[in-house]
Image (cartoon, rainbow, N blue to C red; front, side, top):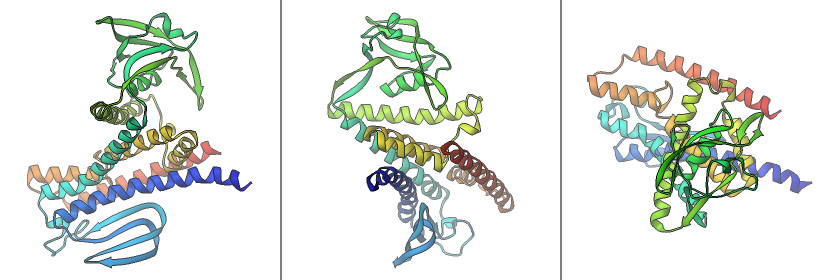
Length: 344
């Protein structure tokens, strides 16, 4: 009984702790950059809500709070004017830009490290070459072992991750592919069987990808390639949302993401790392989008200030931030209720 409860609870705990790790890494980026730029940091908090405990070292108060689903790095003059020469608002534009983007950059670094662990833990390094087919594989009618996949439905393929991404993005079971066969480029139309997952039909991958010997250089090269592939997934997802391929109801918020991560934890360590890498890279890139209430909006305002040598009027900045935050909170509320409904 206790064992069954623990098997249900511990993946959720790991998922929540991972999300807190993403936030801590993000805020540490802001904190380190602020200190390097000589900006006064008033408080660095892990978690939100009432304080568990706090201590002060130098000029900064460090606190731990009860709700481990958030955190912040509060800098002097971050949201208001200050007479302190070490205030965020009194630093040069380029210094403030560095502090603002540092959080997202740290998330991307974390994503790169996770991808590196994933690649390094495999016995071989993946390629885009077909090694063999499953028994009675439908795609073997047009594809051949030894084919190097160059593109899938117009999407350029660089890594083994791109292969799986290209297959899962197809709207039907037929793909237009470009392969390198016997040193020559060849266009083929491959058909696949379909399988259902969470009420949607996806192509069933019926072939295996060839692996090559693992060396330091091949691991680094593959890690960089996989990192770019994961980053591209973020932009492809945004494209799919804008073009109507997926609706708002298909989005997942913290509740849905915790569910996905906890499921991956129970599946395998590689599945867990894959989801974690995608999430932290997603957070890093999405945070740089010019959306009010995100770092990307503050970055946009700083670039505006740097180009035109003047700030956006504080009144308009406040209004845009307030409206943007309200819309963002409304969207998150809708997505959270949608996640809960899906779980039920």
